[in-house]
Length: 255
Image (cartoon, rainbow, N blue to C red):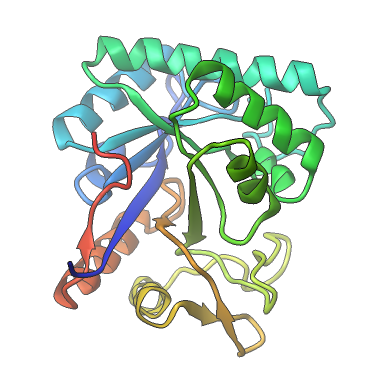
């Protein structure tokens, strides 16, 4: 078989009258959609609409769980007690699964959002709280996490399938961690350059880090942030280049 990769995006993040990204457009380009669950973004009617569009597009659905942080868009660190965090994640997964069922689809994986995603990459206590939530709902659901992070090891030890992820529009340090958004050059905007980096990721097993050295990254899924300026063009250029090179874009969890 030829090479293949999953292309995912964070969707369902509009809230009432406030629009975030263009879900309909990006769903034509990605293979998996990380759909907000109401804790960092997303209103019920908007989430249902996005889920219906994903169903129509044949895109796999994941629960994009978060800290309870609407004001901060889920990007503020929180020291949440383990039992509370587990319950929060269970609640979000259950809510999205109910909406997904109404849309004729289902939740097929879990990907934490923002500060929660970054925290559990290295914080064992919070990582285990999230893992316990998935195990309580459906131990067959894969967990998506940062390639090379500790949470993936912990999840595998608990019997969960894991999916390692790379970010198309983010710069990396030489050790494989993401450059902080507070630093210059952390977010990439040139769609054609980003596409070439993702081709390098797949064919060479890594990317050029912010200091110019080659950094090995093993990834099974690539994320394009749906709320980033130029996200549609970026996803288009990535998919176009990969398919030109004979690389198939397909979900790791079939819808």
